[in-house]
Image (tube, rainbow over all chains, first blue to last red; front, side, top):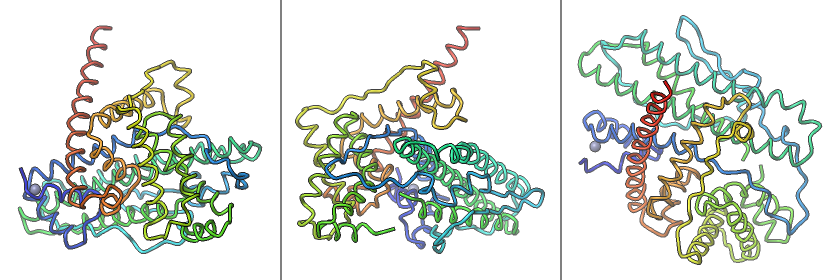
Length: 237
Length: 201
Ligand SMILES: [Zn+2]
């Protein structure tokens, strides 16, 4: 059993410094145990998301309740944009991937540690195939987000006539959906990035030829993950 | 958005509305923590109510050396532990198994979620709850604070009064156990599905 196995957690939960991240990535290339843990723990983390919590009635009654802001005013602008289906613009033949966000206000500098993209080499898996995998992954993420957000968009006008309790319930539900959807997408994309990077590194070692397109793909994906992270930071509590 | 620290300062000075805002902000996470720990809605609500009352009364003693949320989490965990000690047993997993379509329709996360997806989600949720319930309490706590509350290793260490390395060990062991249980559970579900399918065809 690998002596460094617990360090997988630093990587898994994004608590490793940039230096130790690249060290770990080196290690993953060589260590089957850690690579296996990494993949399995990612799946466990996704499974854990399934355990949700029933909506509680508010427990705080000692004071008069704070005025209720209608839920649709608490939904951040970007979520509305997402609801309107503006979340992703995925390019076609050129495999260009872009992300249009309604309003990522207060966008902070990218927070995700750099994903090592080894300059990849003559691939067993060619650039086209990788690009197509990336496109599939993104478009299914997009479909999922759109599917989940559309009801929110259609609920907005109706909500204008709702009572306060229903508004609160809807707000909570919306936030939960947004959270779950983001988290899942991030987890998917992160997992995929990890696989791509590993694959690329393996290929580089096999052969010294370059594969610039893959680098670009991964950079774009990384931007995408960063933007998701920014979105998550700006999400209302 | 007003920071927790600012709201705490105002609440300490007697501003009740500031405290209500803190409640509105932290009620859900605190409830989620209590609910997942006790796995009972009633008791979780009681714990949350009690936690906020204690926090309110203890505001003057809260010097801000920790984050307000950490302090609140800690109060909540202690209350949960007290409750479990009183019961002298770990809480029982209560997973409702009803698959009545009308009942299910109420629980769809979104109108677009298919009944099949919902059933799968509920199966997974039940599997997760059972697997989590079997973990030793300290591993379960570490996983809960990490996975559902996004605390850092250091924050968890502070909250559970143990070294950072212990937190990582508990997390690693907990994840490894969950992995084995969930993989076995998924294999079992698949086997049952196949058996059901074969017996009906
Ligand atoms: Zn290793």
